Image (cartoon, rainbow, N blue to C red; front, side):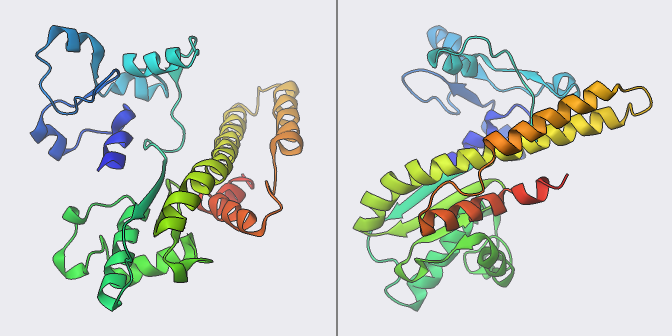
Length: 272
């Protein structure tokens, strides 16, 4: 699965047994993808960058960016990014839409399979890692359905449009012309994606404030008043300039945005 592989871009994503069996993984920045292919061509060797786990760097809470990722930043005109401090999670956030062909809910059996497939997409699970008696779910079906009820947006559920919002994924699934040609390109990968970026910015900012307060608290006996004052000033500026409770006046946009913030636990992190 593409989303499963792309999460391994993080150096802190430990190599799994299945990866070891396939041999060393390499990620190619250029004209073609060479996932899991032997790097025998000297020209390719210069362009491909194998992922390695650097525990020494991780123990210091930072790591050097791989060469191919630095090349991506260079293409974007960003030349001064040398180190990256990992926040919260070692997985890349998933924002994906699956537009299926045909009517996926023609009878009870197809409806059940469709909803099971959505559960796998929502939580980035692999059916091959599950058990046959779970009817297409990665975990207990009742448990997953109850979890999805809390983390999904159901305004258009009757039409087959299923949306889920977790702390590591925003997943949209549907079928038909309206979903595939209108909702996905015009809403999911424009409006909803921009709202998600704001939510991720809030989460990382709040986590950073929490870390800074934790750091000065460890030095409470010797820390200067100015350090606390600086954090306070930065937080007030953040809440008054960068924080938006709503990004749109449209009802559906408001509802999706609140689901995104809830999935990211932004309101919970606000009370650090």
